[in-house]
Length: 222
Image (cartoon, rainbow, N blue to C red):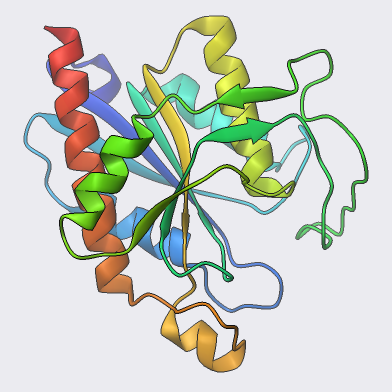
């Protein structure tokens, strides 16, 4: 039986992004794969790596995300991305209906002053229990914080797209975005003031977050 056809299992989609901006790796990609590789009793956790390509055309992050969601039909979607200037796991509170790329995407696209979804609200709020997830991560001794600015690049774009879809369809029940610090090996090549986070620490944080979201989904379905 396909996981999407099993009503007894909670389905969680965890996405990451491919490397961009000259970095050879992306912590969100590695964390998404490592999180999904764990056995989750009563749940199916699937990873999807999105291209750093904006817009809605073939090969874009939004088009890939739509295809995976239609096939997997997740109860929850956790979008992950890299924020090299942050020292903590950052749970985003809002997405903005703006596309203002600071650099070209991986297809060479540059956008200035365009909406993510024409005619949609200017701001959409996360459909995750933001403060609860921050507390879960901090309980492990791992730095975590709330953020109200996901930027205007692909992270914000896919977050707004997902929340707009949810506002129109009512699914998934839980949806939002989490930014991860860069890895120590990235910091060695691209030093910034922010503290990097080792991958095992990032994965521990994400597994705690997924565990809490799975529990919320189970309670919601009862």
